[in-house]
Length: 462
Ligand SMILES: Nc1ncnc2c1ncn2[C@@H]1O[C@H](COP(=O)(O)OP(=O)(O)OP(=O)(O)O)[C@@H](O)[C@H]1O
Ligand SMILES: [Mg+2]
Image (cartoon, rainbow, N blue to C red; front, side, top):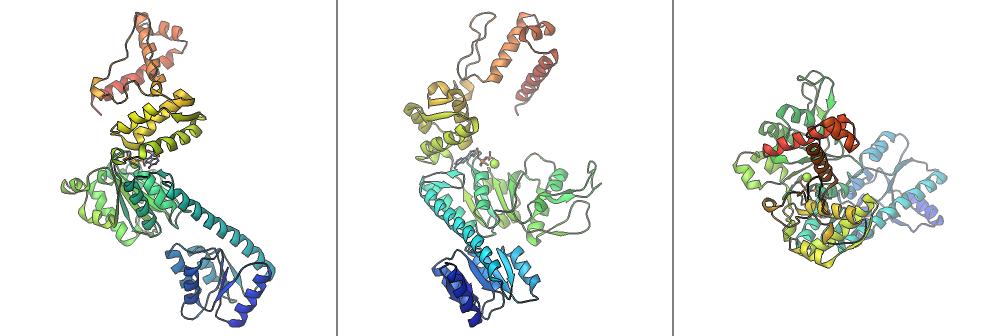
């Protein structure tokens, strides 16, 4: 541990006492010296006085925090400085504060707890470095040079409060990148809030973002906090930013500039401390030239840009992703799949994955469920895997009054085929069909309504 105190007697006495409890101790006579020593060799615990020449305890903690190198810290304060000490504990994340004169028994307990926390943090750091070496960062997997570059960007920008624009095709992992940035920042204990900017009309979008007071617009029956307030002291992801109504983009920019929000229909302003990340699967230049994305907002959010490569360009990653996803899906579905057949893996490597990692995950999820255990083979892939959508065959009936169900048919598809065949058989007598199927008439109606809606939707091309 490191003891920083400008009074020599205090410092020496403290060091001696702590040493007698079995801690290895370094000392510093002010914040500046402490910073230098900690930069050379990190400590599990920092015990620092508040008032010191050159650099005080407050500034020391701020600097260490900005470097992402703040160990659990116990702040010592003279009698009557409780308020400042409390502020350090809350704002800067100090572990605890102690009023002088120090009670040794209290200090001892605190030190042991702080040291345990410091050791845990260092161990986590070490494991993270080791995982990174194996191509894992937070929940992201990837060993190809392009993904390694993405990982190094994430690690560099995470500790700062800088805005980051994450771009990439659908399913490339933009949301996972945003979560990784949050987890690797000092805001990790704060909330992570994601808001999808697509498909919300302007008023609702603004109410989601900024909140509203009761009666602010038709339908605003109760006051509600917006995403900025919900993400206080945490991270806010503006997902699909280029889909946000342009009018809302202007208001958003104002909030980003001065860190205050006003609820719709509200009078007062609320100060917010939120780190903002944004993502889009559009080509940014196009969105800008079409006027879908405001240029000033783009420049405000594009402090850093992380571009995720499509899966087809991640040479060598498909095998590692497959392995990691099978492991995760085994857990999710309580399955015991051990591997994937080499031919299937080869097929995966050659496929272009237009839906990127999400598509790979979906294909594997289905395969893990179908296989349950052992090795995934071609039988566990969708029948038309790799076949372009237009040329896919329809579910065929082999003989009258029979449905053929090849492996790869979903339960939903099977159910629909069976219901339709039964209705044909009863000449559309629904009561009779429900009896044969062993379901209630109501359930049958609900199912038919579902199919009707799905067909109507497919018909409009959405
Ligand atoms: N590098 C990766 N390692 C492991 N899993 C990944 C990786 N990238 C994506 N995934 C998984 O793929 C799926 C899609 O990821 P995510 O939602 O982050 O994509 P997205 O880029 O935000 O997609 P969209 O643009 O459609 O919103 C998730 O299930 C995620 O866990
Ligand atoms: Mg997304």
